[in-house]
Image 1 (cartoon, one colour):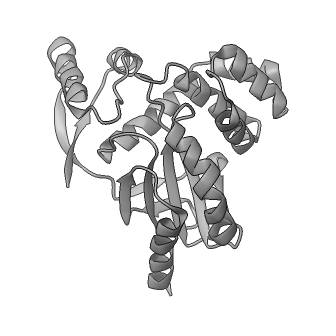
Image 2: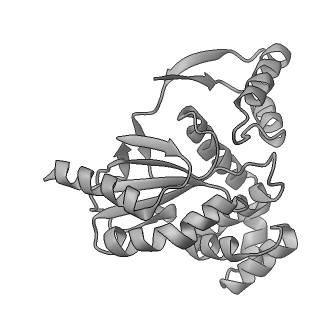
Length: 237
């Protein structure tokens, strides 16, 4: 399967991301924005293969490094379907597979900023929480927040999970964490994902390099995901 890849100069990339290029269910709008960038900035698009492998991030992962299978979710902290997966489906998967050492679970951040104006701020804060060893504490707390995730709300959540506020502010201001969020989003787009949550599953080695077996957009029941995990585990025996 082929998809369209972009080679973006930094300024154009920032403008494209800021304009909300990832719009769930609005592929035509995405293509319009891509074409506009091509015309204005001289960006050249070339066909690329859907990734056959992806690298997991240690600070964004749960489970044993020796687990034979990995599940990656591309998520958005203001996406209600992402929150539903984290609340309703993931606890079963974690208990049955992650805690038993059979599955490594990893999160990548893909804010849909066209419809979720604070999602990028929340994603950056989660990245910075990872620097303090509390990515998943921040991840879970952000999903439990009921209101908009503006600066004040993010600071409140950060305090609740015990983050150092000065370190968090410095991290969010240094410019490197948002770039990592953009990298995750670009990786997700290469799979032709249409929104969040989106998933990738497959075997993983001890260095955190996963071979993609299947990828899909949209929430699924824990029982459906368990069936895929069981098939992959059986194939490894």
